[in-house]
Image 1 (cartoon, rainbow, N blue to C red):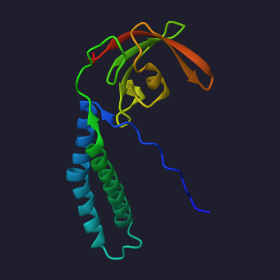
Image 2 (image 1 turned 120 degrees about the vertical axis):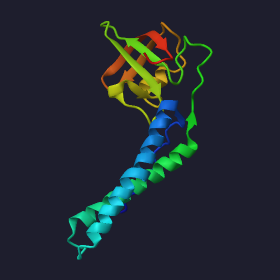
Image 3 (image 1 turned 90 degrees about the horizontal axis):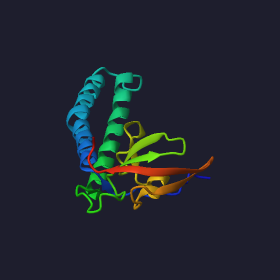
Length: 167
């Protein structure tokens, strides 16, 4: 038996201008700064003789493989992303890039920005457009009530604000 894993579904190709800049900055940092430093340290470690027991050499080569893999991923990903920088005509409806404020039944409010799968970060309030909550919110108008299925049951939220400029 092999380790077959079915292919994962691809995420959406949309990205905000800030997300694209962050991916390009990461690519530039890996390729222009970190990779040359690791290459130089591996070169110095290789001069020390026996490479089979040389930790600097072994871990340096491993880090180079990780960097090269990430650089390949970022290069391919940046070729296929679509940067969404235009604001929608109807700013009272949830679309990609919107900051959405939700209120639950207890009156607690949460604010999320709907972004592409490459830039989501819940600690910063950025939610992937491929997430179940974002899929439920997309296309909904201001003051709409949405029901989100969760493992513990259905949660209802009211959309209390929609913004397209970060505040």
